[in-house]
Length: 238
Image (cartoon, rainbow, N blue to C red; front, side, top):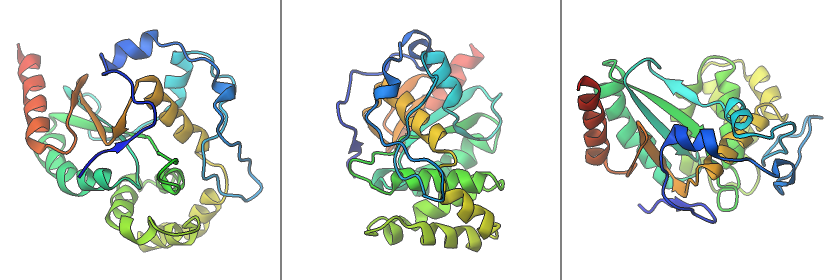
């Protein structure tokens, strides 16, 4: 399945940390993104980021979700979109294998950054926020997996699937009232926006994008990912 392209795909990624250190972040107040406040209205698009004038400030605001022990030698970074079919394939078919072989065995950890492509996936931003509302109750990865598993059930909704996402929270045994209050606000909109903006500054061109210890890898090729992880492990032993 073809990866979902982001508008204005740039040149290849050099290294994850070097780019973060040198990129200049300008004009964030003029991103052209919608500003959605509280007042009980669910934020479904990125918001303006105030007071973010450097790459370091952006990196500090962009908070990924982490699966596994962050001290492990291999870091697997994904920039993903909950409404992207390719991301669903990765989440349902490839990530469980990587988790069993490398994360659960203490060889690698997994890091997920939101990269919602609202231009083609109008519910992706809301889905990213919903997962973070679940994270408030300690169930991010369970919710992440359920939303991807049910992607075909909510992806084509003509309206924001707030009720559907709340039902998923209830299904997982979360406090559905607290979850719904979170979702029907702008909670976590700044973090999801910062994640998206960070991906843009790193010239992320598609979802899912996977980076294994600063090596960009085909996210839909299990063999390529395994080879990159094993190569990183060998280099760590050298």
